[in-house]
Amino acid sequence: MSDDLPEVLRNVRTRPLLVLRLSARKLEIIGPTPAGIRRVGVIFGGSFAGERLSGEVLDGGADWQTVRTDGATTLDVRLMLKTHDGALIGMSYRGIRHGPPDIIARIEAGETVDPATHYFRTAPFFETAATNYDWINRIVAIGIGHRQADGPVYSVFEVL
Image (cartoon, rainbow, N blue to C red):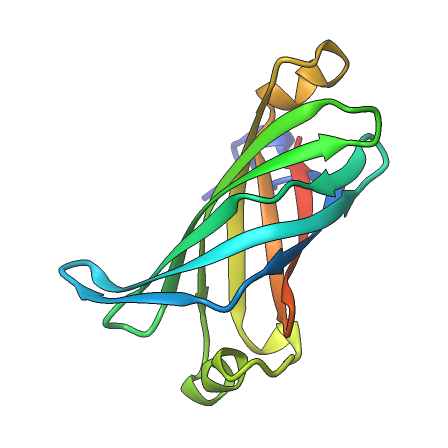
């Protein structure tokens, strides 16, 4: 079906952007809502590092999660990043995590599991007023997540 397409339209190419490590408090459970079970994880810190930017995650972010009836958990996250040279970058992402019920139960219990055992993907976007990081306002990124006991870790890639 794609034989007649130019090569640039046949595959998605990416390059590493950063690794993001978040420190999160225990989830606050709002409970069952019309959309599903709502819970919120407050982000109180973390770090990020990549070839083109690195720094810390500032206190005050939040991960609004919805556990759906099909067992998948959707994420709606907003963070503030501060680069090593003092630039502020807003980061937001939506995501989804799902997998076999026994694996998800282990994750929910705080156990670190092999990231290959479940699906955990995000779609981050960024915004900044810092001219030296202006390029980040105009990219699309994807992330692959992994949940550890103290918070998630994401490998984030710029889509080329």
